Length: 74
Image (cartoon, rainbow, N blue to C red; front, top):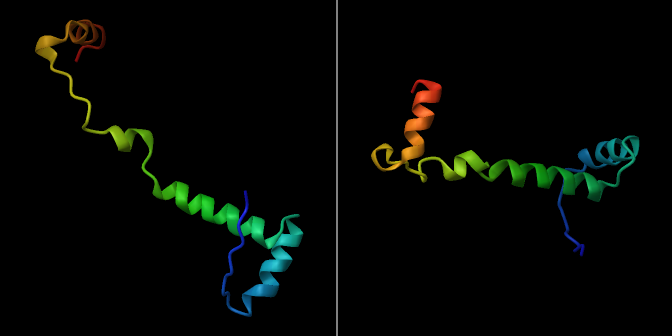
């Protein structure tokens, strides 16, 4: 479901924005939505960043570690 949102934009930017949107076959609303999605998604941590340091393997109690150690010469 879509919602309306009012934006205040520099008046010199409005015609340039409309022309850019038309050139790319999009509405100004679509452009704003695309750019906001990129910014919001880029701000969220990735999978590896989210889990980094939270999974700990105790090599003394993990028999699979020995197999990996031998296989990859760790």
